[in-house]
Amino acid sequence: MNEKLAAARFLQPSLAPTELVSICDMLEYPADRKLGDVALPCFKLSKVLRKAPQKIAEELCEAVKADPDSAEIFEKVENVNGYLNFYVSDKAVLQDLLAMDKEDFGSSEVGKGKTVVIDYSSPNIAKPFHIGHLRSTVIGQSIKNIHRFCGYTCVGVNHLGDWGTQFGKLIVAYKKWGNREEIEKRGIKALTEIYVRFHEEAEKDPALEEEAREAFSKMEKGDEECISLWKWFVEISIAEFKKVYALIGADFESWNGESFYFDKTEDVVKALKEKNLLKFDGGAYIVPLDEYGMPPCLILKSDGSTIYATRDIAAAFYRKKTYDFDKCIYVTSAGQSLHFAQFFKVIELMGEEWAKDLVHVPFGTVSIGGEKLATRTGNVVLLEDLFREATEKTLAVINEKNPTLENKEEVASAVGVGAVIFHDLSNGRIKDINFILDDVLNFDGNTGPYVQYTYARCSGILEKAGTWQCENWVLTSDAERAIIKTLGLFPEKVDQARRELEPSVITRYLLDVCAEFNRFYHDCPVLKADNEAVRATRLGIVKATANVLCNGLHLIGLKTPKNI
Ligand code: ARG
Image (cartoon, rainbow, N blue to C red; front, side):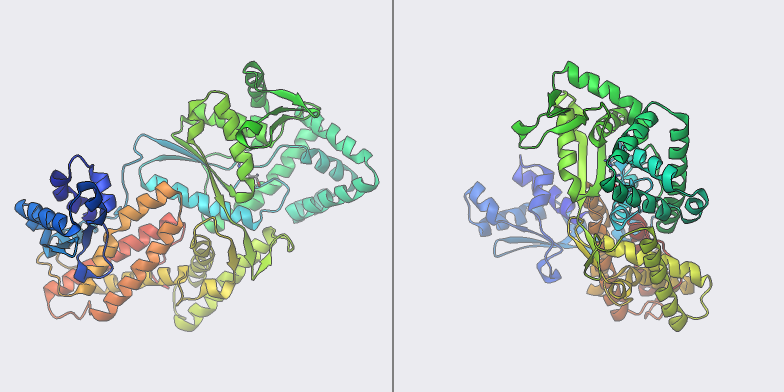
C-alpha cells in the first residue's frame, strides 16, 4: 500500500476538484510515528480555502472518519495543531507485508509498451577505457535495469568511438612504427603508445598530419588495407573492453558505434541543406545556434569529412526509425553537455517533434585518493588494478571472518567489484567523486559490502528457519512497523529513480533499509521469538527485507551472494 495514496483517496471528496496526485504531494511522512504514519499539513490549504488550518484539519478529520472504509486502513485519524495525522492499522500493515513476499516486489508496468534507448559506456577504440567510461557504464547499466524493472523495453547501445580522423593517424603511426606482435600482446597500451608517438613526431614533421588525413579519407572511401587495419584495432580494443564489462556485469543490446552511421550522415547533410539550416562559415559547414545562446554546431569539415556531432544526429534518426523510442538517454560526463544541447537543438530545428525525447544524463568527475585522473593515466590497467585490489582486500576480510566459506574468490569479486560500483552510485551523479579504496570497502560503513552483508544475514536467518506460516501474523513493536514501512517505500523509490534518472535514489534507500533492518534485528529476536505467530511475522519481515535488498542491489548492478 502507498500510504499517501490511501490517505489521499479519503481526502479527495472533501478537496475536490484537486487531483489525487496533487493531494499526495501535499502529504508528508512524519519522522516520528507518534505524529502518524502519514500526515497532511493544512497551512498551505489555509490560504486557498480561507480558513484556519486547525479548522480545516478538524473538518477533514470528520469527513475521513465518516467514511466507513477508512477504519480498515487507518486505525486512528487525528487533527493536531493544523495537521491531520493518519495511523495505519496493524491489519493494513500486515497486508502490505504479505504483498512484499512476491519476488518481483517493487517492479511495475508503467513502461509497458514503451521503449527507451540508453546510450552508455561508449569508449573510444584504441584509447584507454578510463574511469569516466566506468562511470558511464555503471550509471547507464543501472538506469537500464531500473527501466526494465518498470516494464520498459530497453535497448542499451554501446556507441563506440570507432570512426574519425584519429584512425588516419593510427594507421600512419602503425605503418611507420607499429609491430603486430607487440600490439597483439599489449593491446590498447601499445596502440596508445604509437598514437602518442604520432603526435610527437607530427610536431617536428607537419607532413604527417596530411598523411593521416589522406589515410582517413581512404578509410571513408573503403580502401581495403586501411579498413582491415581499422577492423583489427576495433577487435583488439573490444576484447579488452569486454573484460571490464564481464567484471561489472554490463551488457548491451547493440554495439553500433560511430562507424555504423558513416553512410547515414549524407542524409543528414541533405536534410539540413533542404531546410536551409546549413551555413558555410570559417571554412566549414555549420548550423548557427547563437540565437539559442550556443556556439554553432559543426557538421562538415572543409574537406567534407563528418564529425562526432554529424554522426550523433544520424544515430538519433536511426534510433527513432529503428526502435521508435519514447526516450533516448545519453550517459556521459558533464563535459559533453554542450555537445548534446547543440545537436538536440539541431534536430529540433529540423522540425522533429521527438527532439524533446532526447535526454542527456551528465555526471561529475572522479579522482582517486584526491588525485585528478588527468594527471594519472586512468587507463584499463588502472581499472583492472582497482578491481583486483578491491577483490584482494575483500578476500583478506573473508579469510579472517569466514575462512571456511565456499567459492571465496567468487564472493570476494562480487563484493570487491560491487563496492566500487556502489560507491560510484552513492551520491547524486552530478557530484564529483573522490575514491578512497579503504572507505569504499569498509564493511561497517555506508558501503556496498555492508548492504550485501545485510542481505547475506537475512538469507542465513531464512535458511535456518525452514518453513513457516503466513497466517495469524501479529505486530508487537514499533521496530517491526518501522521496517515494514521502510520496505513499503521501495516501489516509490524505484519510480523516483526512474523519473530522475538517478540510481543514487536506490543506493541511498538500500542504506536506509539496512539501518532500519538492523534496528529491528537488534530489538526483536526472530528465530527465538516468544511464540509462533510473532516468529512467523518476523520471518515475514526478514523475507521481505531480503527481497527488497536483492532486487535493489540488482538494480544498481551488484551481485547478491547468500553467504559472505
Ligand atoms: N565516445 C565518447 C567519449 O568517450 C562518448 C560517446 C557518447 N555517446 C554519444 N552518442 N555521443 O567521450
